[in-house]
Image (cartoon, rainbow, N blue to C red; front, side):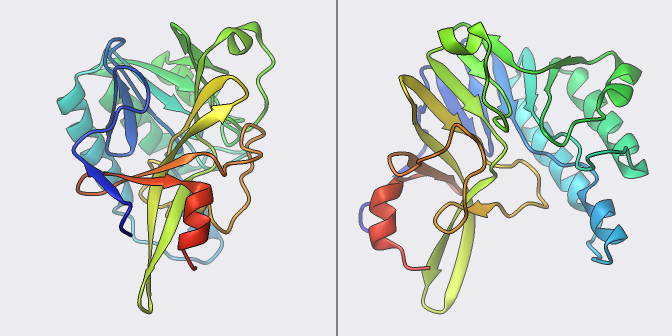
Length: 248
């Protein structure tokens, strides 16, 4: 695609950096990532789908590199740290505690509740972890995005960061189609809105060109920019422009 912009870094919010599939707020020294979905492999096994169990190590290896690079004071997991809705599987108990320990050794950890986190408190209480419905820092409001915020902090914010929809985009090269996780950057009314990709290695993402967005903050993404991170940060331009150029 001729209009593709390849950059070493791209600031999608003031004093911020995209670090792999996470967003780092430099002034606040706050690292934000979402949709880890620990326990997904075990849930798939129960349904008869066998997945190799190396994804958690891939996740923690990647996260350790990011923590070493950014040295954050605060880490925010923006919803869906675990996968099962109404229970806590053995895998979720073990690996969620391991992940909490990994992060808590290096930074203050905040868990923002997502729609998959209906039973999260028993795990968090084991390590006395901070759980919230949302998190604010200066004029930035951070929530999972599965429901419309109604509080005063949201109304007074200028920038919003959500997760939830696992955005990705598919590109065709001849007969081959590759899917890439992506950030979405746009607006909701007068607020700058950033959508994080899923940090989970087991999620390939939901194709924004073919699949419906579920967050009530994403009723129309045509004017959102698509940002893909591979060897570098790629600015794919606006969704409405891609709809004319990409055939999937």
